[in-house]
Amino acid sequence: MSKALSIAVIGGGTVALYVAARLAASSAVTVYEANARSAAPDLLLGSNRSLGSHAGSTDAWLSAWGGTSKIWGGQLLPWEAWEFEGLTGSSWPLRYDELLPHYEAVRTNLGLPPIHGIIHEGLSGDEEVLRSDENFTVRRSTWMPKRQRDFTRNSSLSRHLATVAQRRGAIVDRFEPHGTQFRIHYRDLSSHQRFVDVVDRVVVAAGTLGNVRVLSKSLGAGANEHVGHGFMDHVSARVARFQVSDWNLYRRAFAHRRRGGVRTTLKLVTTPALVRRESVLPAYAHWEFDVQQASLRQLGRARVTGEGIRRMPRELTQVADATARALVSGQRVLPQFATPYLRVDVEQPPRVSRSITWRPDPNDGHLDVVWDISDAERASIKRVGVLATERILNADCGVVSATPIDSHEFVDTKHMMGGARMGREARDSVVDSDCQIHDLDGAWVAGASVFPSGGVANPTFTALALADRMVQQID
Image 1 (cartoon, one colour):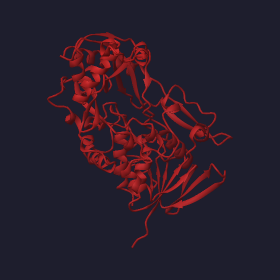
Image 2 (spheres, rainbow, N blue to C red):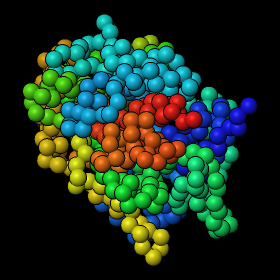
Image 3 (cartoon, rainbow, N blue to C red):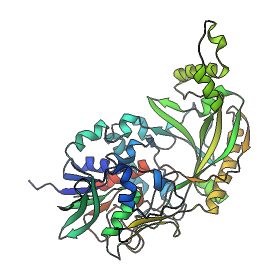
Image 4 (cartoon, one colour):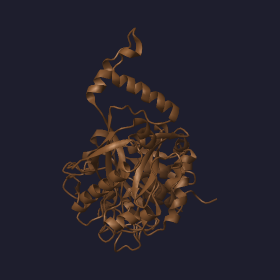
């Protein structure tokens, strides 16, 4: 019987724990997690870091066992085939059908019901008020419940993670080849001592920022040339405020729905035909709701008196009515004093001007993030917003009018992608289509940092599917 491989997984977050659990079935896995909590930015990114205008680099990551799976909303939306075809100028070096089965594998390995694995328009149907057309595809994303989206509590993963060795409070400085193996250099936060472990394989899965830090310190000048390039996110802004004329119809069309106990939310996703015809970037439109603060305070003071419901505030009556309807229909509780806004999230293409750079200094080093929002991204959000608003107003969806918002609040969505991009050749990328580092057998990179383009949908489901595919290549 051959000896089990020893594998180091650097990182203890969403993708890292999934990878560790999958590998633990046949290998001796050790997970290195800084677990630095509030001290993490200085310890991992450097005290002199410059993170620029990208909010996600500051508050969208968590250095702890489980990482952002503890604060992640759990939204799952599989990509479509055209998202891999390079509408933004960066095609993927693998075919969509090579990745498609791994969405289902992720669903199964996380113990999720089948509805999470339904692709494309599978969640839409005759009950949808708004239908797909040549401009927009009606899709519904699904949401994981808290007990499953926290990967430290997910029972399907935890039984495998029980066999994984955990180096908590271990900051990996670098890894280096050692014959056919690798040395893992790390420091222990509690003892302040430095250690070296020797392993057969390495998987770098420390999130986009962490991956760039580790790779920058580990790879030689040639292999390091492209690390940090192609940093991306999605750009988001409100585009219109709607006035509802028929709340029953509006709820039927747009309220969150529960299918088989799973929450689903509607998206209007641009079609490739629209992207080409209008020269816009791929995007999707979705709803968000504001509730008047005065109404909330009034609800907080409300009391049911002897005269019964006739003395209840109007808003409380609306909440009671919306709650009753939601219980019957499986929709979201949506009272009539909520103000609906349409928001558009647009795909951000990789650009040379956006980057993550690890810069050595006397205190070990620090991270610089250069990120911006281009005029093309702003223009795409506005144009898609106009078209999506027209689409909604022309349908029988219970809305009577919309007020355009000339937004100046264009923000990132905290979807950090790129920096260790995937490609066919070492001359223009960091990893190959299997996520293995070019010219370095036995070392892989997992997570959204390998994305050569951002796609429209949120990245986590696709990052996990890529990681599942990568695991099959590790031997």
